[in-house]
Amino acid sequence: MIASQNSGIKVSVYIALSLDGYIAKKDGSIDWLRGNAEPDPGEDYGFQSFFDNVDALVMGRHTFDKVLDFEGWAYGEKPVFVLTHRPVDMPAELNDRVTLLQGDPEKIVTQLAERGLKQLYVDGGETICQFLNAGLVDTLTLTRIPVLLGEGIPLFGLLERELRWKHIKTRSYPDDLVQSTYRLMDE
Image (tube, rainbow, N blue to C red):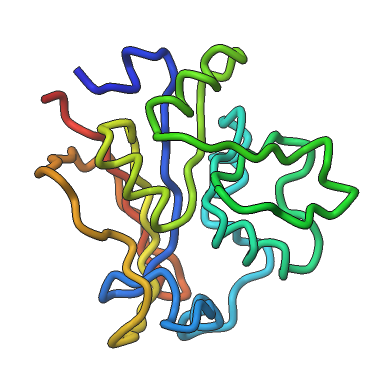
């Protein structure tokens, strides 16, 4: 049985990566995410539908720092939990939406289940790997951008064990992006 099923929380990943498996360049930049074509401003690649179905977002500190550089706050009123051991200079407008947490993934999931949350979106390479190693990720949605970076920050670091996934669906988009969704198979 999948660990997150024991807690009552479902944990999902929704992330873009290069064809060679990187989520950012070595310097952390993500300017390459546009792909080969000018993106259709009306296309969100299913993100809003996905996001509407999660109760909260859990992200790592590096991802949170990157998100703070974006124009505007993309997560509305949805609670965001940032995993960090360092102090954060929190923008005042986010004080009621962003909570800092510490601990291993199992502890985090237990704390969030106790708050009544049922569906989490986990983001950030290191955080995703920690949740994968803990056996807590139920669903992966990976959007491949047709670019080879050659080097950068990989999505998947070292995993402690083999994890097998069942393909749920794949969709290709006019701008050459390909998105696949997988569900963790029961062990």
